[in-house]
Length: 471
Ligand code: TNX
Image 1 (tube, rainbow, N blue to C red):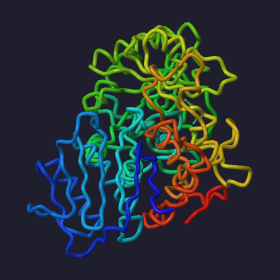
Image 2: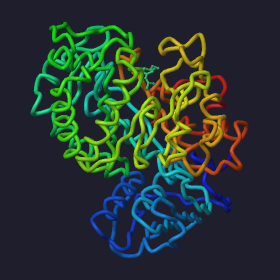
Image 3: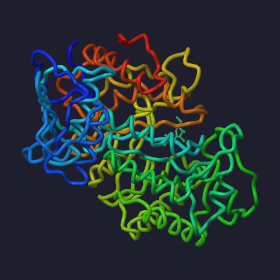
C-alpha cells in the first residue's frame, strides 16, 4: 500500500519515485499573508524545513480554481517538488494535513497527484468535559488530532448534572461551586472566559470551529445546586457525582430561569465567533412535555436575540423550530423522533447515530471502559454506515454533516479518551469528508492500519483493534 490517506481523497493518482525531505528543503508560499505564512510555517515544522521567500521545491499557492471550494486542494508530489494549490487558506491547510499523513513518521513523500474537497460542511467531534473535566492542554491536543483528519467542528458539552465548566460573570457560582467536582468525586474544574477564548482562537487557527453547549432544561443539577432558585422547590442540594440521567430540570414556569438562560447564552455568544449555540435539550425526563415544548421555543428566541443559530439534540424537534435551527440526531431507530418533521420544515440535520458514532460505547465485551446502552461499536460499525440512509425522511439535501460525541462518564484520563476516540473517530472523519462512492470497509481498514506509525509518533493511545492490519 504505497499511498494511504485518510479521509480518502476524491481522486488520487500515484506517480513514480518519492520526494525526500532534506535539511536544506525550503517551503515557499504565495501570496504570503499572515494566514498563509502561518500554514507554511506549520508545514515547515512538519518537514523540519524553513520558510523562504524565493521559489522553493515545496510550495503553497492560493489562486486555485473556485471548484475546490473553501476547503479543497490539489497536491502534486514528484521526485523534485511538492506543490499544494487551493482556492482558500483552509484548503492549503488540508493539503498540509495530507502531506503529514503521506510522511507518516518518516522523511519520504511518495509521488502522487491528489484532487480533494469535502462531502459535508459539518465534520465534527464532541467532548463531554462536564462528566469529567479536561484541562485546556488536552482540548488543544484533541483539536490537533481533529485537524489531522480534516474535522472542522469541536462541540464542547460544557454543562451537565455533574459539572458546570465555563465561568459566567453574572452567575459566578455556576463555575466556582458547580464546577468543583465530577463523576467519581474528583476535583473537576472549569474554563475561565480567557481560557475559553484561548481554546476558540487555537481551534480557529486549525480551521476548527468551537460549538459550545449548555444543556437544558434537563442535565442541570450542577446549576441547581449552585442556584437553588432555578429549581421548582428552591431547596439547596449537594453536588452529584454519579452517572444517572433524567432527574433534574430548570423550573420552566419561573421568570428568573429566562434571565439565567439569557445571561448565560449572552456571555457565551459574545465569547464565540461561530454562528452556533447548542442548547442540549436531550433526555428531559424531569420536565413535563408541554413545559418542555414551551421552554425550547423561548430558548430559541433567546438564542436568536443574541445573534446566533440554535442547535439541539433531536428531542428539540418536538417544539416548532425555526428553519435556521439545527437538529442533532442521536436516538436509535427504535425510539421515535421528530427529526424528519423538522427537516421537512427546513431545519438542517447533523447525524450522530448512537449505534455508529458514539465514541463512548465499548468496542466489544473485553473493552475495559465505556458504556453499552447503544450496543458494542466495533471499528467497522463506526465506519460502515451511510449518513443519508440513517434517518428515514432525512436525505442528502437536509444534512449538514456528521458528528461523533465522546461522552465521558467512564473517561478519567486523556489516555482513556484516546482509547475510545481512536481509531473510531478517524472513520467518522472519512464519512464526513469522502465521497460515498468508493468507500468500503475492506479497503479502508488497510489505509487505517497505515496510520499506526503516525498515531504512535503523536503519542495517541489508540485501540489496537484486531479488525485492523496495523503497521
Ligand atoms: C445519552 S446522547 C446522552 C448523554 C449520555 C450518553 C452516554 C445524549 C444527547 N444524551 O447524556 O452521556 O447517552 O452514552
